[in-house]
Length: 120
Length: 111
Image (cartoon, rainbow over all chains, first blue to last red; front, top):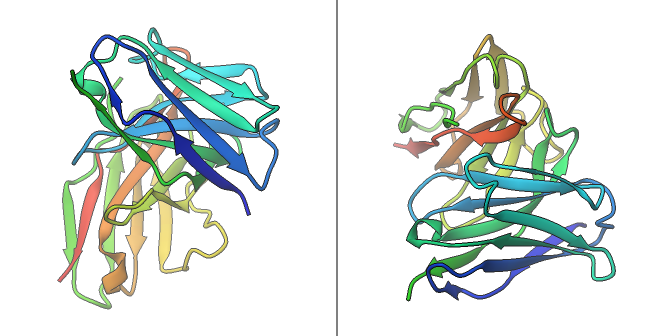
């Protein structure tokens, strides 16, 4: 059974870089689309981006200038970096894995989510 | 870059059928499949429907999805108390360099 677990600081200062890691167990990270999604408190879901086949990425147009998603195959992990954060980036951040193609599949395996607060 | 449009709320009594709409555009729902997620309070979303109307293993057949043009619907038949949750649609958008977009979310209340 595939399991995902997010980890990283729960508090980040404004203008700094948010860094999160998703550790994958029960399957190889070398295949599939691995995604990051976030949800501000009390609000809806927002897609951040994905990484596929270790090096291919696609990001939300609204976050593209600040986001980097990468994979560490030796640790079976993938990571999210979001630069120049503001209070608007405060959210629960989820990592997830896609089943099927990126145009028709769905996010079937999810981490439990981790709350990141941006505050000085 | 706009979210897909869903009604903020829907409700029904146990056993009833409830439908949730999801409205998009030609670049997302009009061109690609629709996905539906259920999010129970305090938990991660759960995949309910992908490729418009396919259910992953373990999802009850009370949940069904459909699509027509630039709109889609999720139907919950035989509503149960445990169906009280937030529901989100999603689709791939072909504009710009392509990206995934979620709906605004619908809170389903079981009366």
